[in-house]
Length: 194
Image (cartoon, rainbow, N blue to C red):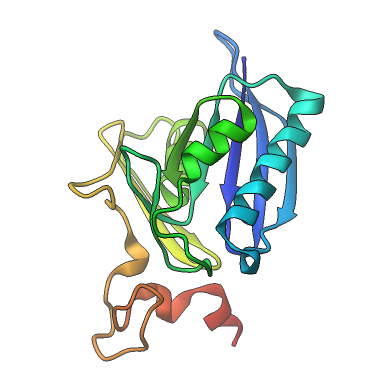
């Protein structure tokens, strides 16, 4: 069976086709990348993601479902976006899960991108075989995830492991989340580059 993975980043949208066969290791069949073009707004970005997935389906489909890594918070029940720190536009309330599912005609699931990375590293990557794994993601933003006792840890509010939004300098620069001195405000890629 084949599944599609989409990653919504501040700079690029990425796609990967994963094949999962009983008794075999999951394998990456194909990948693709396109600029996010976030300045065009949520509907245009979602359309870009659907188009990327459809292009991959042409050569590598059909898919059983699609998993979407997002750079922020979303409502677990509805799949609507709650808060994106590093993507411009009116994302709050945008029905991303429903839009992707309808556009590709397969069930869609959302997960925070840093939590997706953590799950992958803990199950098929560098942390494979470890019962507890902590990951930190660095890029347009700073994120993290925790894999504890063999399970991805979401915490009480779905933000367990969100290391980028821990205040480390109380009177530091204002972060995109609105808080002062977050690790992300001090260490994200554009700040390091500057």
